[in-house]
Image 1 (tube, helix red, strand yellow):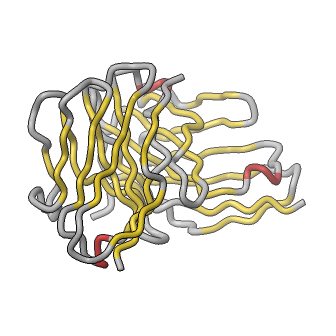
Image 2 (cartoon, chains in turn brown, blue; image 1 turned 120 degrees about the vertical axis):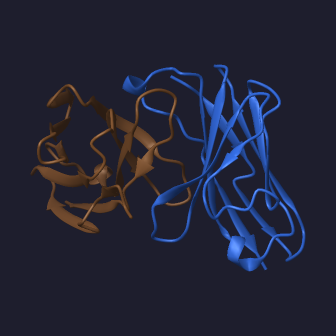
Length: 112
Length: 117
């Protein structure tokens, strides 16, 4: 029973264009949502997060949108760069000092 | 930002032996430690949660006698894989937290690739 789902295992985008990575969740009690970037044999690196009381958070080229009614969030990267190529994990957590629940990840390839 | 050191980065061991993985929070006090593992092309799955000075809480399906967790100090936690078997081969990642806030995101160690032969 996966509480966080990333239905696209891979995504290929041309350099300079927008990358949109999607994530769905089932637990309406999740309080915070986070996106991580990961390379093979390395730990995840935090990118951006959003509180459940907001619908958008922006940080440079990265914007996360949250649609609570649809239990859906997305990460937009614009403009995409070849260095963005990695696996992106969506994660969610309950309030307090609680662990993250991860999706299966989406492999993003940005083609020059 | 929070700095986490995890060692070793990779280890190969024989079946039946034990392996210890260390995770240190270098610039903050980790009151809680999360241990995850990731199988190839799979998601990161929580194995256990430990609070400093307390016994760890294990997720369903994770054997507490096989995966020994020690969190005796606010800067160091260890995960020992005892009597390792090939099916324990995986990527193990620690995530210490001192309640530094969701806004900054939880920090993760660099991971340990365990191969049991």
